[in-house]
Length: 165
Ligand SMILES: CC(C)(COP(=O)(O)OP(=O)(O)OC[C@H]1O[C@@H](n2cnc3c(N)ncnc32)[C@H](O)[C@@H]1OP(=O)(O)O)[C@@H](O)C(=O)NCCC(=O)NCCS
Image 1 (spheres, rainbow, N blue to C red):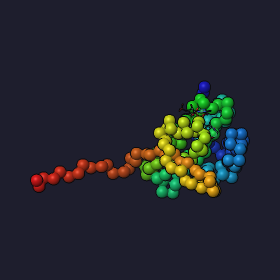
Image 2: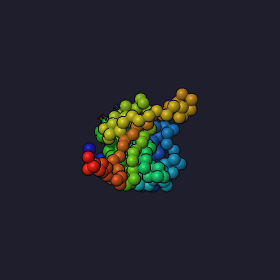
Image 3: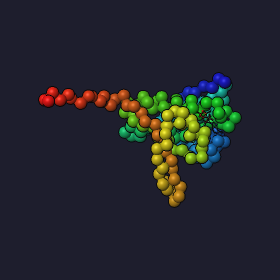
Image 4: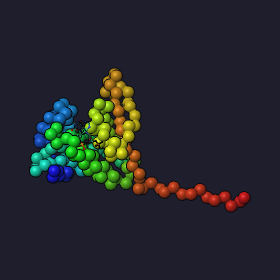
């Protein structure tokens, strides 16, 4: 199947919101998506099949540029299980990894979302922590993490050889 993954445009707004409403009603709204475009325009990707939008995903990075976040991803039901979710993860990781200072990429996951967790594990993410009561009493949030080998960190040097003995 000829799926194209490419940077999303502002003109895709309405189609993206329609798609998000189908896959995760009430999770994403136009205002939130517009904010992502303002803050992280290079981190929003769409998946198309014969010019039809079949999925999209968003990511962000913190102000120190050390922690990237996978923020949202969805694929319409009839196109799931064909590797599109994993392609959308890779597209975002590729851009995030261009930040020399990047140390880790985090993502919030729902413990029951097996497809999402499998896709993230395939990309090297591991369960990292649970933040109790994050969404209110008894509503915890789970975070998965990918450690990034920093290209800018100084290389470890061998300890000096002791020549006094
Ligand atoms: C999560 C989601 C984006 C994955 O997209 P996808 O295109 O189906 O993902 P892929 O085809 O790349 O498959 C990813 C993994 O999930 C597995 N998978 C796919 N559908 C599955 C299902 N229904 N149940 C269990 N595992 C499933 C695949 O086998 C694959 O795992 P593997 O690497 O171990 O083989 C998609 O299911 C979706 O849009 N869900 C609703 C929105 C959502 O939950 N978004 C994530 C939180 S923002």
